[in-house]
Length: 175
Image (cartoon, rainbow, N blue to C red; front, top):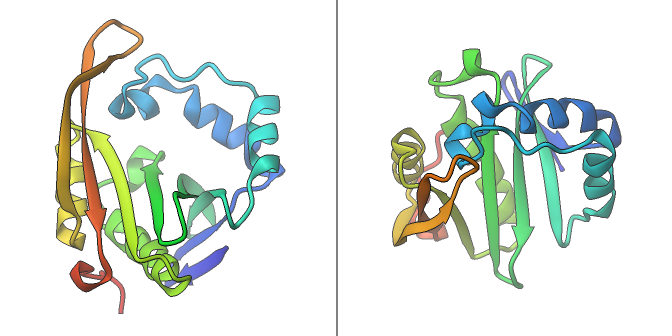
C-alpha cells in the first residue's frame, strides 16, 4: 500500500523500518496509552519476522511519514471478506494534536473501502479520550465497552472500547 495526500504518506512497513518500529514499541512513553507503560520489550529480529509474514490479504503494518520523516504507524488486519480491523499510533509526540490523525485515518479508510471492505473496526483504551474524539468525528460508532478487561505491566486494570464504521457513516477529512 502506498497512499499520499499533501505532506502525508502511508506506506507498507519493510524490513528497513524494523529498527524504528522497535524503538517506538519499546518506548513506554509511546506505548503507555495502549496499556504498555514499560514498552513491549521486542527485538529488531522479532519485528522483521512479523513484517515478513504480512500480506495485503491478511495483515499489514504501515509507516506514517510526515514531510518524508517517519512519525508513526498504522495497521490493518482482514477479519473476513467484508470487515477489517485498523490501528494508528502517531509516535512522534511533536506531531500529535495537529490534525494529522484525522487525515491519516481518512486516507486509510478511503483506501480500505475502495478495496471492498464494508465495515472497519478498531478498539482503544477507554482512558484514551483524545483518540475516541477523533474516531467519533470520522463517523465511528461505539459498539461495546470492556471494563477491567486486562492488567497492564504495572498491575493496573485496563478497559477498552470497541468501535465500528460503515461507509455511509464515514466523514472524511481529506478533499
